[in-house]
Image (cartoon, rainbow, N blue to C red; front, side, top):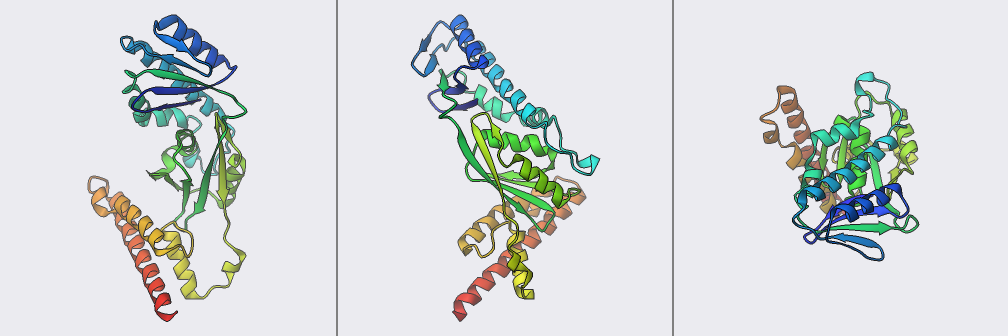
Length: 289
């Protein structure tokens, strides 16, 4: 199931021949006077019964949360108890970040479209690239923005998420062993949540990386510092540098504790130096080519 909205309607996607769809259709036919059944959808046009629409949206939204909670229960726990993955991560994430549901409810004055989808045709694939940073962090990048994928990541990692920007998540890996991360990655590599098939891709370092000069090793660390693949074009590196610089600029931590301020200052200094090193290396390579 998926809930989205645009400037014309709120859309709720439901699987054909499911109990939830039957309940939603029954509720709509019973409580909305202006509803119209089409071949693969149901339109609810009532604009004077907004509280009923709010109830319907809340109901279907939390039905999704409960299903995702059940999907995340099979995940292993890390070695450190203080860093345990939160089995109730979805509920806490919804409590701490209710903005998604609030945004949808702000559009409940619009018509509601119940889209009835066939299980054999609705599966959507979303790739998630995984990068182990040299900073004790795990970077997850979605190839495209997807609500179900984002919420599933929040369910898995909860407050271990250091930052979330655009389609990228930075996870604090302190206290987690690499073998533990690999077991998690292997477990969730083919997870199917509702109509979304999440494909987690994890690339280990090439075996050839063992034979590097000191300059090559330091340069690769700079790419890792910026969380980009080695030898990416300068425009890609610059874009990533600007994004990280905006996140970790020391001014963004002025209202935080001293330890956090120090972290921001150190991170900003490192990413600035990494970008400068990569830029100089590429300019030198062009000059000597």
